Length: 305
Image 1 (tube, one colour):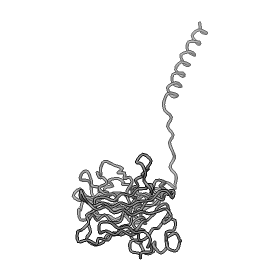
Image 2: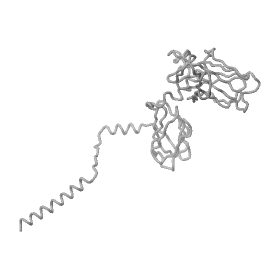
Image 3: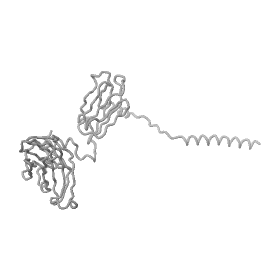
Image 4: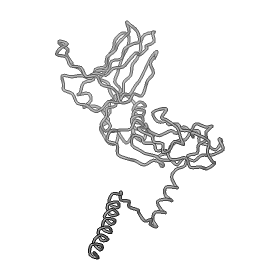
């Protein structure tokens, strides 16, 4: 009898142990990291992030030096959006305590990233209404989708725009209009084509559109002719009307094409019977273009600053 009683007690104790073991094994494991002295250094670095002050009566506009690819607001205490290529706007969702930390905003551009700690201020006069992001506040990062930021394109284009004409062999004329190519440069993976239009008539020229095409030199049948339309990555002059002269610098991705093809810049007038002028550029002209030397590129870079 004692043996049976001892066996029952043993089995009961084993069952309780098994249930407890099963319960422990069923629970998710939690790993707790012990704090270390260097954690305080990380905390202090985070405290030193750039500060941005906001108030519910002021809309804060943040101007980034390059086009913005993405922005992130870490908390629902702030509302905002991207209102232009390089501008975002934010505002507190509600009234808060003075000097309350409302969260962080992260702005990612074409080649740089910036992050700010956003602080609520009870005084509207102390809030940032227009905030310019400085280069020293940004960190660079590699973006394989951006070969050249738009800001750099603009700097090169303006430098080329203000330079003297060096091409003399590419010209076209029609309907009292004359077109000339002033310069062709290559910078990195892009072509910069600088050209001018001159109006020798008394009727102003209203530009409807500008199209860039890669087409056959000798167009035969439509079925045999292949035309590729190209879109400029950047254009410095968006003026749609001129009386006497008009100059522009367009940026195209670097391309190669056979001798049987020609690059055509077509500018058409804003009328049903409008005037159209075509500037043909052969690949040999691009190969012989000025602007391939490092010294010239350095000169253009310095001039654009």
